[in-house]
Image 1 (tube, rainbow, N blue to C red):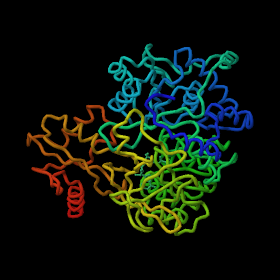
Image 2: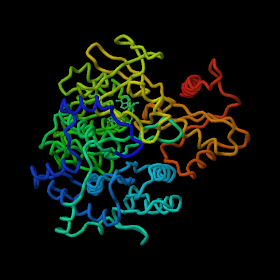
Image 3: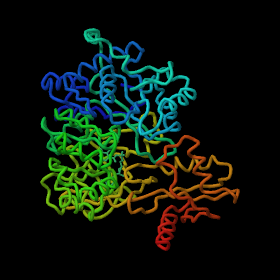
Image 4: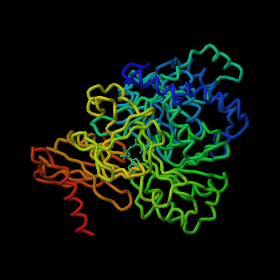
Length: 545
Ligand code: J2J
């Protein structure tokens, strides 16, 4: 097991194995089994390209050898920053087979995030597209490589702009040569398979170690709850490195079920609706702001959505007003999904009464999930009352990667993860998300850690103090507002935003609004009162509208 990854105490591990949650297979084995059973059945559709299960399995083996020839080996960490393209699967399954660990970055991440990920995970390699959505990832990789000398390889799924980088298509060895893989001593199912990025509440993002056993179990449960099978077609519109479209049931759940993954390069109805119609898409997943766009478009384009059976919405709270429109406008079932990269996933069930589907965020997918809703002293509250949600179970981590100190706060002594979400529970066991105690802004599903942005702002010479909070937004649910006490009255909002961009911060973390103040409101104990700041900005917005 990779050092720095807390794991389940043996008595729990034993229980999860005995009860059959943990199947004892790795991702590499899972793909092999599907390839043997399903052969030429289509696994992935990407534009004109259609890849069968057998072909995907062969491509992965050919790439395994190429990766090995570069010196990538078991337990190496490899940053994977790919958009929704077929080589994503070749790359991650090849790494899984070797026992190297993908570290999932999002396409929107920039120099700041990638340098940090490379350094913190001590990455051996970094995999990128050449260009995507008009952005040049080779340019980004050049900057990253200069900052991180330990990064041995940059691998480009496309055409590299420099000889220093490897073209991924050159790494696949010829058919036949992959037999060398036979001698490979791959990972065990209890090993960590990859590191997933947490939404984050701290100055530096935390990494989440997920094992083959626990993640494959989460796929199996998701597949069961979402009723996926060989005939299902899942459209991936959200970036597939994110935990929701990756696993709930997402692209990996679809492969687990033997279904067809259809990759969309853009989330707009103009791209996605024709794919739904032409590929017979049965299920897809959106965050609430995208659901709004789709609902509006569907008013006049319902004929394109006839095959769609299920629309999943999650990542941020979906208002019941919008939820009510899904069936009427799109003609498919709504499924609310409340999950987290740390583990626990909740779904409304496909046969739930309308009232539950539109008003709750679902219930845990596994009978082995333990959830508690507690007050400030960790005492359980009554049904219907609001408290913080704590959880423990067969696919919820017991600690972040190399974060011993933080883990003491983020987990209880008996191993429950403190989600930082405020929730209540209905008598039927369904969760309603009521707010958040963690210092995070949920910008339409994109999570922004206030402290991370505050630290960047504090690096500006004109900034004396900074406090970042959420402000209400009709479309995204929340946007970010940065309150600043400045040394230098001349500094402007635009200058501060430009400063953060120049530091290589991803665009979604740049504050939407900057407010200057002489001093911050304080709590009774002299801390900055973010509650007062949130109220202040919400009131100010109301006055203006
Ligand atoms: C309110 N808040 C929600 C919801 C997530 C499936 C679905 C989503 C994620 C995800 C995921 C919410 N209503 N329906 O990993 O597998 C907020 C909560 C939660 C945090 C986790 C999956 N669904 N949230 O969004 O790791 O605050 O995972 O703790 O990105 O998103 O964020 P993340």
